[in-house]
Image 1 (cartoon, rainbow, N blue to C red):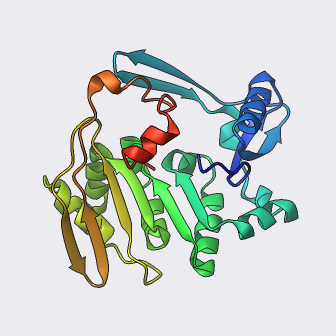
Image 2 (spheres, rainbow, N blue to C red):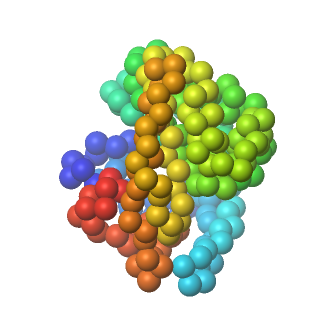
Length: 239
């Protein structure tokens, strides 16, 4: 996306099979530095996507993806990549695979003054991983999720409210380990956002920005979000 091949490193776990080979090839094609931990006797994780109109349903078989180990990050050649990185992004789904790896990355980012970002990923992750989110929140600089996920994590944390703004405000204001403010990004499918507002509290700064609604006819792939050109993403400020 930024036009510099191999500027992004991706860690994950795959099997020694055809699908694992496909992932390695596709990562190389787009210039991503994929550093996969390989479990030769396991199958690579797969995900079936059922698309109906502009909606989709996912069914995953995690397989090898569930077998990533934190010690793989500690290999000298891998840790050098982590030390070079400035931004870290972890999907909430990975919490069911290897929490020690997430804690290790979050701690490194915090100690080194780097940015640590997470995505809530799904409502069931929010409701079942409460204790782990509580442990990670002080290190989270940027948090992504949709409206349902934020309401769910707020409920799990005891911040129940019918107001999205109140929920976002409470979550954004959870104590951080650093003096940096937390950015909370809420997606609303095709709905437009609210007017620009700014809140300041305890040195935290939050923005809610109005964006143009996305017409359903323009949505062609919500699973991989791969149907949109880079120039259009920049134009719409999605990147």
